[in-house]
Image (cartoon, rainbow, N blue to C red; front, side, top):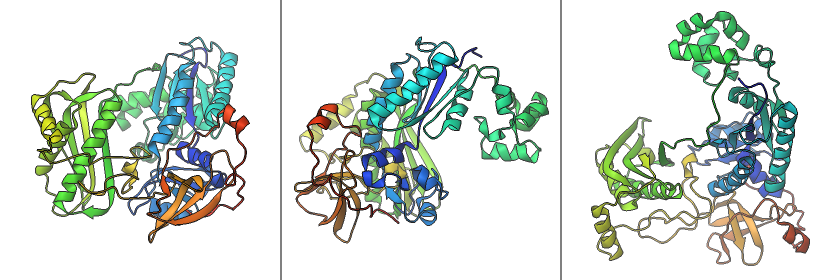
Length: 486
């Protein structure tokens, strides 16, 4: 254990929902839920205003709607969140070469390794400055925990939420942990927590009193030793700058079970395309292709095939996934499909068969094409969506105009806005920007030629634009927030 609180844990506050509120002035201070909106959708993030009603991440969206019927329900914008995450991670890397991202909105930083902090006072200054820098660069808030270990730093950031900073002084850890519930410790989930509760252990102090031998008897050797060490605030894990990526995968859950075998095959090819694009963005290739199929009865099957060498060739991955699909019975219907690549490498071994397939495709001698053209928001369908703006409606068919709540659009006459909802051949748009007040709402036909998908705007307006820009009619709008609710 260190003698100074120089490990920092940053956790952005309700990240997806906060980003949507910052992007949409009419939603600020209101309940916002981001996730899949179909019958099988799942909540990805709920704003603090929505959490008051009991809504939380991983909850079925249908249940969330019952708890908070007047909240705004939006589909995720993956590329938008990733761009903000990159800005935040850039600020962290200015503090230290040892930054360990855990997700888009969460990371550990070793301040001592970067010479940014060496005692409690300097660590607190760094934490406060980081919070201010994040707000200045992204317009969002994050909570910071500072401690002498990763476990305590994460606990501290949880206590700091929302938009705060908590520093745990070395030497006070045992007293701080003692009254806390056992679930506070990492690695103790609901099942382990219930098991300990039945044994009469509900707090961290009671874990210590039970003793290491009893915990080993209750939880097994490895887990028992680990839990006892954590209860004593012992955690020597280092901050690791590069966390090895073991696999890259994408999956979609469908609102209605898919029965048509041709449609299932088309979906698998499209997923393979998305997976390869994600591989290439990471500069990786892989040898093992994995197909995941969840059937109508919730049974989940996985099949895999290992190639002769690592590849990032979309045709090779599509063909392997198709072969795997041939061995899966989908007669009763499919509710989820996924394609992944593992056995990753940072080089590609060219495959002569793939080159032949590519040549055939380019001359029109082989079936197929670009089945996975994703526009606007990145890979966000895994939370239960059923499509993305700009995606091909079917193999070889024209692009279908699909307007998803929360996604950015631009109209030739009214400027930038976002989709509040669509149906019955109509789409409702609120025209506002992150820098305006609540904007006006207008409804169009879904095929209105003046309406098109748009890229998200930055949450913080560049200084030069701020000085030069004058309020537009949309920015002066005062229509109260409505739509996308219920």
